[in-house]
Image 1 (cartoon, rainbow, N blue to C red):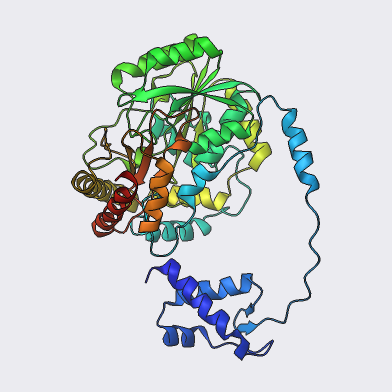
Image 2: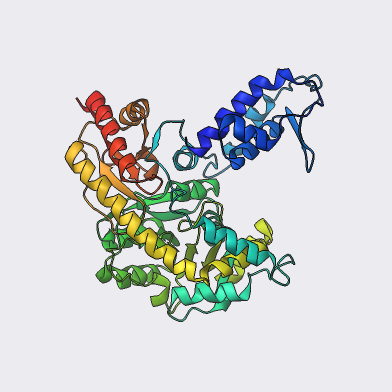
Length: 478
């Protein structure tokens, strides 16, 4: 049984048995629960922690778990209806309302119901994560001298140097700030580079989380279409001229959701266009370490070809490790670096030093390169398995581009197909897929869905998921 469902099932069983014990009475030992329910010690520990969080159990280190005392009567619920008027009054005074619909991100963050195959994930499956290497790195980091002291505000120097080497070009450690994950770094960058109410150019389609960051900051996302070679330079130039924007956010490598790589002949043109407009490019280099085994040599980050400080570069370790390993670099040159630094300090102070030290331990170990090679091979296999199954079983979903990096495929629905209906039908059939609408900041040209192959146990689960998607297509597409 999947660990997540095992924890929930055991917690439900223990919750039902709680009436057998008097308040303060000791529950069976963890070892006894392991034997009785044939689950792992980790499952028992997590189930007890869940009951403790619900106030049903009290755990005492070295003594065990006990039924909690009855709760006191609940306090009467207050009246929060006044907030509707206050929040709407604030929105009326804003040039661009900052209310945000987070559904586009929640689709890849929330766990699906038990038994549902997760084609909507945004992270590596547990079997692909370097859990043992992470645990070892964290343990070694905790023993480093000064590991629990306050870190330098810009980040641990050796980690900044490691990220700088990865950027290439003339980037040095002094150009790098350590941030708490890519989402945090993108938030800092957009707040630093554009005032509320300003336009910001974005690829279309693009990552919904970035659109939400822009809207939460009161910015106006303006779409610039991409094709299989990345953003189209002539449309980028026209968008800068029409809007007066001073920021363009892009993902030049394995773009989310299309998987496109910015073509070599477009790179210099995109930099030239932004420089001529007096604008910054925010380069979200989010999956450089998730290239597939057949990807070949990767292009350098845009920031490596940028002598004038046009590019603000964001790159994270999270996608290649674990959702909880939120260590990222924010790279910039010139006066903008001080603005980025000031905003980050105000927002977060600093990234916890043990996490930074653990990142150093991880990337400096032989396990790191082995992990990246393994993931490259595994992602290629999963991509090929999903592509083969889709072409065989669901040929009416158009797959215009098969990426050589990242963790998902972007499919176009037949003309007239209802995207929301297909997503709902797929969930009823037992597979969670991501709708395409949140990836567009204006009206989309057609219905789309995004299918992730990274959050799955292997080829068998992929094949079964596509089979379930076939049932949903039969229901919706006819």
